[in-house]
Length: 77
Figure 1: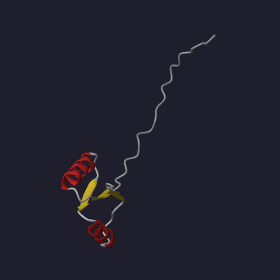
Figure 2 (figure 1 turned 180 degrees about the horizontal axis):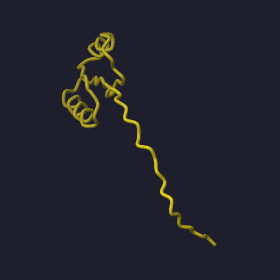
Figure 3 (figure 1 turned 135 degrees about the vertical axis):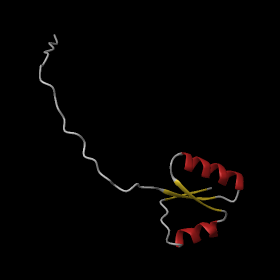
């Protein structure tokens, strides 16, 4: 048997702390020699809220990685 008891006290929670953290972004490097696939992948990555960089060849992709710009994920075929 389950017995429920009503309480007259309200649980009061303190308001959540507001933090002003800088927005974090994830950069995805897309490496694909097919321009159609490259554009589709770029559109999908941007639609999901990520920054996208594109490279047409493996050499261009390696150059982007070596450039020192922050790249978090590499998507390649």
